[in-house]
Length: 229
Image 1 (cartoon, rainbow, N blue to C red):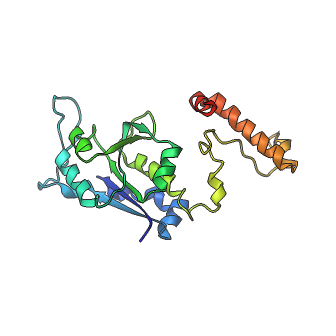
Image 2: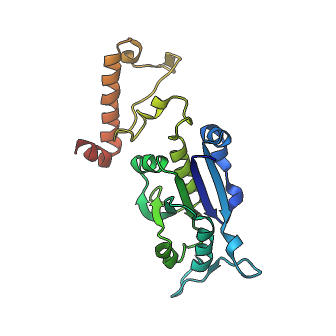
């Protein structure tokens, strides 16, 4: 049995594994480092039409996912103490630190909303933690769930080729990642910075730190202030 388990509650289980079945995540899935279950919320509907939504209380456009159907779907798979996450644009922003913490656990249960949202009562009743991957709105939570799971899976032992490969990435130390280069030495008149080809590892390390600080200061002043603090 895989050590790290991802369970996704969705109206579109056929969307999975999707990208999670490719590249590093896919290799880890195939080798049993982690497992994925996509459970169909509609399977918990009780009428012949498979109804999972209804009109908003108080009026307004769109439809709302029903609390009773979603609660049954959660109860059918929530058999352990994994975090119960709801992908939502109003949730707490996902950070690399939160991803690392999730990756160290036993896995996640992720609820993917659709339509105008889900009934607020099921969020409270099933203690769902709302998580956001950015200040924008998607058609549903599935793509956001894939992003969260991929971010976690790549940190699992044995998934990345080199254990050190994640140590100097963006956000790993509070900074954006420094610029990267490889052969050819010259490309359309642009050359690799001389410090990277000189063989002085101390100078390379200092250059990379300085560039990471510069990029963070210029592009993410919020991260820069947190780094300084």
